[in-house]
Length: 264
Ligand SMILES: [Zn+2]
Image (cartoon, rainbow, N blue to C red):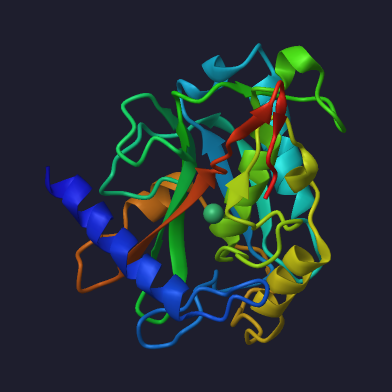
């Protein structure tokens, strides 16, 4: 299918950037021309909506709670505010960015990918939309903080996964060298620590939005809203913008004995 081949092509581009990038700590995503990928205004409000099926992943209220934890973790002065908005996201469309959070059981990526954030941005790097896709074949939970009880130890914490993906919504890339970071590209079953940002994540998002010019306004209003439908109404022709796919992978581990796993 055309849509899948487009996404795979884009994924390959991102992989090349990662290989070429500095893996010392957090990574800012750049376009092929070197422009930083980010929202155009650090005072803007970015509204994400849950898709129709996503709340069925967990008991009632848990998915919403996980999403709220994820957006709250990234709340800093000078960084766009990501909100979970009322109402249901428009149905997922691979050709349009709806600022939705979706669960896909017919998962088009590798099975070890827990979630993928697809963003659309202009050649200038200006982000215009994002969708968070969650692998519906993974066993998720909303885990207690700290060491998970044995019966939950095989589950992946949805709040941790969503917090990582919201970092991508804001424009951050993976932080390959810092395994304590939320933006480390792996997450282990039973762990919740990526719900809380590490210094590396905080430094990354602040760096990302520190140097953007003040927004041009003539009304005195300093808040913009990127709603799903206005983002979706943008044309998505290849010459107009680039797409990126960023994935969060299950950390591959080998059982050592019993319930213990090699951590790294
Ligand atoms: Zn990621």
